[in-house]
Length: 320
Image (cartoon, rainbow, N blue to C red):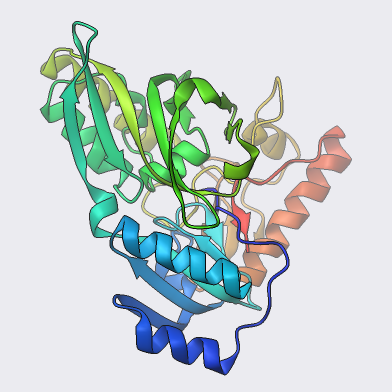
């Protein structure tokens, strides 16, 4: 997922601040955590602290305190679009749990449409499965996409010509001071792999959930479309090996995978990181790849593609 940003000017956490968090935090707070365990690439350096936040109240309190103390923080979702460098992350990485994993529905004034409220910590697969069970269509294109709802929203996740932003009624944020906001979809600009609220104060805020407007459909048709999309992914993508999904954004009018393949980079390796022979826009961990292996391969791909085509690829994966 794309990462929410902390304050830019932050300080190294003092021993007193670490002790305060250890003593006062009501939930899970782990220290010096290897992020390879929390990243779909199965690689990464250590995070100074990893907090699991179970409720809006906890989130608002934690983010407000971190902001006051000028301690860096990031929300990492399910780790499907991040890589912590070998030098590690100084600050607090946050996972949204419990209250942020719910999915509920309510009636809509528009006939044949249901409003679905999903927490940012809910997995995309759970949301799609829940909608299928409720005979709600629209999100079939997301079947098989890894990660969380929050990450999918931040990246305006898309496939097969559709994007999640098309179905957004509103998005819920907590700003960097810890205040909650409910923002209508009409006040958010969705574009290719980007979601930008027009309220600049929320640019670096945390997405805590969203409400989607979904039409009622036929369960069998929805299920078949999901199964078809999953089959296409299995056919074209290197599933079953650690990766972060599509590693680079597609440049306008072209595809990153085509450019990487045309530059002759399929199968190229650095350490145990490799450009997938099945899909060139996937960097896969073939064994014990380090964050340095992956970052090095990323940089080599960018340079070689630029030399070949004049296009500098931009990563979708956020390197912390």
